[in-house]
Image (cartoon, rainbow, N blue to C red; front, side, top):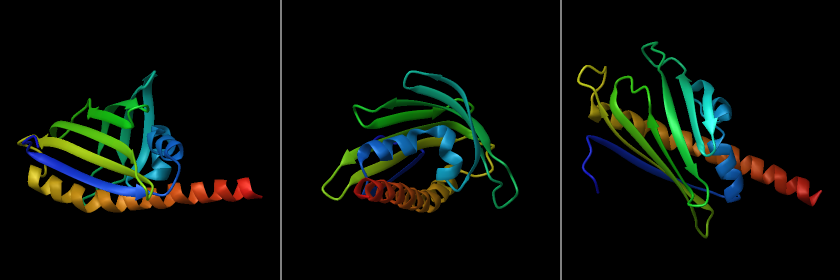
Length: 160
């Protein structure tokens, strides 16, 4: 494993078709409906499998509103997405890797975040790691529930 100041990795298995999971989690414009923490997403530029967008979060516990520009490169054939913050804000860097792996139970979606915070950031690497470790699993669980609900509704429509 690469030694980085901050790293988190979380997985969830989603009982839904891989195409549905891929489409719902990579449609960044719809993220405010998918993620509880995102107030808005503005797609700034899209070319092929690369999208540049601005995310604005809902205010945090201290009333701060976080916003930044990220760029995602999606490789559907490989089942992975790589992203990084273009506007890094409090981070020296933030690199994200999402992967989608078919298993007997469903699709295992894994998110890895590698990052380092700037010395003047309001939190340090350890605090950000703890925050991500607290928030990401619950976000992933909510996303799993939403995607599985759509998959069930589509299956019922097909049977009707």
